[in-house]
Length: 317
Image (cartoon, rainbow, N blue to C red; front, side, top):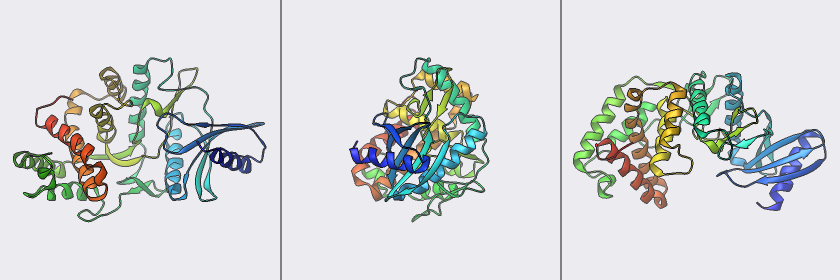
């Protein structure tokens, strides 16, 4: 990490705490997207997370989420301040002593079981709307930006993907889906449109790397930048399925996934209806890549093809 970033973190922390900095160091692993530094003064030890000023709204959302989950009984760092300093959005949090969940000595299945119980609590937090943008912190209202073909609602999201399943669909051209599979997928999405889903808050990136486990075995949940209101418990469960299919380091093993499911209190029957939401997400993400990020078409195509194979009975999950 650039030394100037550490110096900026020191200045942000010193200005807020009104104390001289004694020590500081960057956190540079665990797949962190923001620039993160630990800063120590005479009486405080804090974490300063920073990014471009355009990300300030994300820090507002994270602060709101952390406050809500703390009230629900989920251990999290306290947010001391958020703001913008010299074109940099920042968040100052209390430092949590312990080991990252990836490195902790507590059995990983135990941590995943706790995360399952946390997910259930998170999904019970009162929220309104649908989407990843927190537009009204007072009422916990979220929204998803409208775009061509969708008004930003869940119904619009599903309908957009139904309307995109045409004879000249780019997904057919890419070899992701056949004409026959397209008809079957359309039928699945039509059924989803009529289903009555429950909506709730989703963390968006539940994984061991986003936890700190202290000496007492208490699991603190971190990093709410990907939080969104979506269907629950589907949104969180398919996030883990997604990681498993891709073979990501963040993915739980089969035993850890089962521990998560047990901690939440879900059954095998509950899981059977969630794969269709994973299919919807995979197909929609690919269409986004086609329209906005051509460099991601190949990996998104490969993932969508895997999910389609699973849904058509040719794969396992």
